[in-house]
Image 1: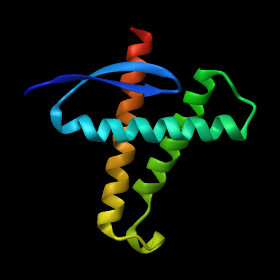
Image 2 (image 1 turned 180 degrees about the vertical axis):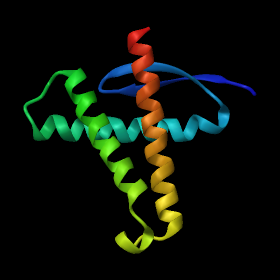
Image 3 (image 1 turned 30 degrees about the horizontal axis):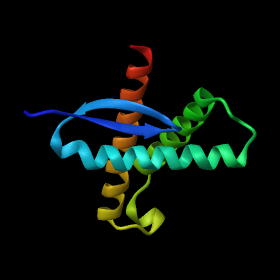
Length: 106
């Protein structure tokens, strides 16, 4: 399987990731969603520390994933297709956060 290295930017910091070509757009979309959420948290609260912002974003996204996993389409009036797309998006974001954590630790 071919791999390519892409750079994503979150909270003003660049992270190189090696991904398959099929993952590129999903990873970029996930990075944009994480970056947007961090900006929202930064504007809502007096938190400026990047690690705190990442932690709160990861927590909120994890809560969202758990909610999606435990809900059914009839409970939230979403179609199965919408739920599947939401789950894929949140899984991509979780994967992205794990990769970023690995890069930060390594």
